[in-house]
Amino acid sequence: MKKWLTVFLVFVLLAGCSSTGGKNENGDDLKKVTIVLDWTPNTNHTGLYVAQQKGYFKDEGLEVEINLPGEAGADQLVASGKADFGISAQESITEARVQGVPIVSIAAIIQHNTSGLASPVDKSIKTPKDFEGKTYGGWGAPVEQAVISSLMDVDGGDFSKVDVVNMGDTDFFTAVKRDIDFAWIYYAWTGVEAELRGDDLNMIYLTDYSDKLDYYTPVITTSEKFMKNRPDTVESFMAAVSKGYQFAIENPKEAADILVKEVPDLDADLVKKSQEWLASRYQDDAPRWGEQKLEIWQNYMDWMLEKDLLEKEIDIEKAFTNNFLPE
Image 1 (spheres, helix red, strand yellow):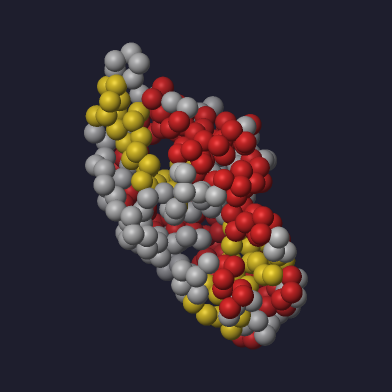
Image 2: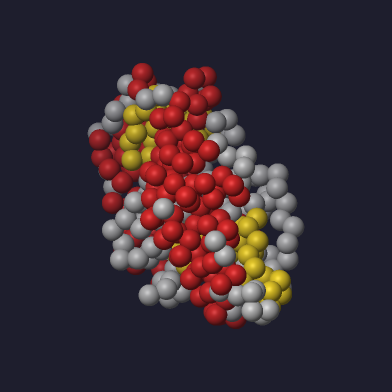
């Protein structure tokens, strides 16, 4: 959902990639690698910070630098070799690979799509048909209209009766009080924040109306080149990251404390409540954290093709891999 062409943060990537870092307790050199986030730090990223704070990366012989995205976005930085790993989404990777950008998903951070269309209860939007006559606030991407129209088609609604506006960087809570009725959010963050604010929301999850919209978001990526040239590093990185997310699954309170300590500007109450909400959803019904299914990638690509969001098919089996996840 956080598209690679619409990430416009003011942070600048400072570090180089894949150099030698410090040393571990045995005096061995650590391999320095970087990962670029998709957005500002939040509970989607907790496993990374846990792996950092708990020393899981060091245990794997790595010194990992976690960076915020510049204007280029994580996908472009990973594809160009300016970052070793990144955070992205299935949608973005599919679009990128259509354009020949060789990035690969190596783990699903959250097993099922937890995003949906949210509105304050006083807007009386309980089903997609209720979008008629209402104003949607988005960021101007074609996929938004395709998703909304798809949900409305299932519910017998008419998308032409929806007013679509670009809300830019206005936050959800300000926008719904000002000039929009509903927006696309991730419940784990904005929905949980609404709970803390005491703002009741009606939430229409994408997966309630279409199995094809149960795609992986967010995911961890690397480039085909890095995966080919440095497979041991990718495997070591994923061993540490998997351990970090497993810790977050089993210890949400402590994991939240770690994230707040590492990123003190975050709202501690929001992080803790969000972490509790996500703990059971990271792995959910998958046999292990991070695992991805071919049919999920195929279904979403088919949907994008059906909605004319892609120029052509991609080779799905090259877009993701489970090979670097620990057994």
